[in-house]
Length: 134
Image 1 (cartoon, rainbow, N blue to C red):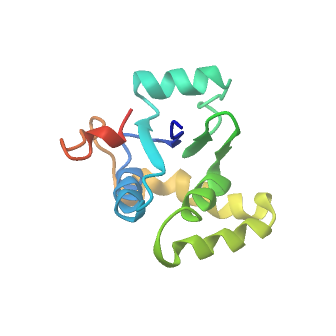
Image 2 (image 1 turned 180 degrees about the horizontal axis):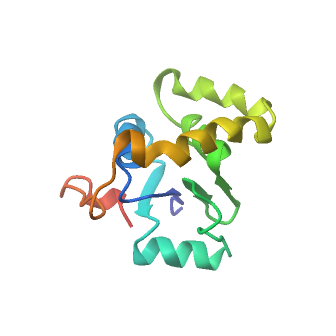
Image 3 (image 1 turned 90 degrees about the vertical axis):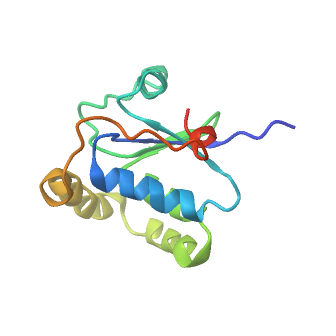
């Protein structure tokens, strides 16, 4: 049986987002996730196939192929529930109303470049991590 990986689309030039990818990579002990920058050819193809308007969604996107896709706080919490350690306990926050969770998410998203900075280009994965990126 072929393993279907969940796909995380992230802002490839955002330092906070790149840090989040590194954080997830270290805690993805079950090899659940694959990654693509939103700006990449693969990322643009995946959002186009799902009719996701990335001009109006300033967010990380989690795609569960054949199931659904999630954005903003829901994506972040669905990712966390698949991580090793105590991070999967974050999924209890999914019980809070999404509109409330997204107030916090949107505040951080709006300020991420100011607080964490921005790269000129998307990160290039090391050869050891290349298989994790689409």
